Image 1 (cartoon, rainbow, N blue to C red):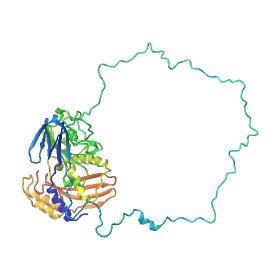
Image 2 (tube, helix red, strand yellow; image 1 turned 30 degrees about the horizontal axis):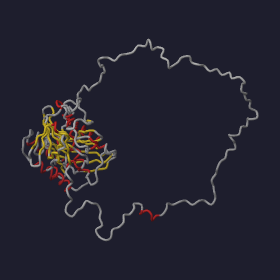
Image 3 (spheres, rainbow, N blue to C red; image 1 turned 90 degrees about the horizontal axis):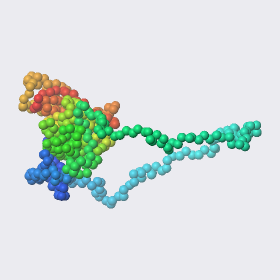
Image 4 (cartoon, one colour; image 1 turned 90 degrees about the vertical axis):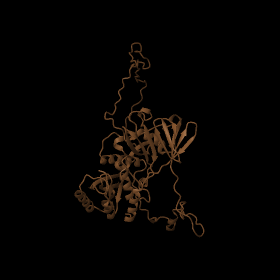
Length: 440
């Protein structure tokens, strides 16, 4: 497990986390490329925010496609290079083959052949090829007259004898085909989108050739059974950006954040693209799929969709150099609708007792609980405090740690399990509430 100082530094970094914008651009029908920092659609117009802060509007009919370009990686610090191993002094040495280290052992050990051949080969005294009854067997002689009767079918299968009196069915003038539909009206958690209009399709460099903009339009469609490209089925306005937060970098998945209007309210969708499908893994998942879910059930829905997305990449494999505690905190934060959704609740890792006391000492805002009951909750949080822990279990590695949420001032005990098969699951228990500066 990492040191307490490293965990505290990471917790401080989470408080200052922001979403960096990737470069956005519009490709017009005449081939012009309009580059900017952000692209937002309102009604039938696209608004491009330029580098200087000015906003330029373009009609949707003139837009061919929308492109998102990731920012180039930052240069290495002074004195460091990322070009791989180098010879700093002395002559260059030839690269050694991986199997050269085993040549000193010589060929594998072999058993010496015995001086006496002790192999026993059994032979069968009975010859199955010898016909011992050949001399006494009776045989039938062939008849001089061929008495074989060959029956001939008088019915010709190629002749249609009923052609003159056959009745035929004519096609009905009204199509009576019945197609079942979902009576509940729930939206799916994922969409498989294809090529629609040029304005809805972005560059083909995205995973599996699916455009993030098309995914966002599908999530904010008013009716999931109709094409998201219909104007009356689209969100009145929508914006899209790549998620570059250091908090989610340890997950190793390309994430996108879309903001739009659904049922008259501003909603947020955090999704990824895997296997040619758009996977909703965070944000206001309950509102987007049309279900009134609790925070716990919404986290379970997001976790299931996130595991499906990671399964297409070989499962949840923690990248080299990433701490399991960081990965677990990113998993819990992304699937929590209070954190990744439109409310933007802060979720802080509590790595040391001093951090818990610092949160408890801060006061402000309004709280429905009296001071006496709040002190009781603070004592319960102090008694339940435990250092972050990573343990190897029967089914996988188990990570336990405490977090504080500004929504209700909740102190949670988070339990994240990394199963052997590459599936991640999370469980949350409430330790205390109304702690620190919070919103009831």
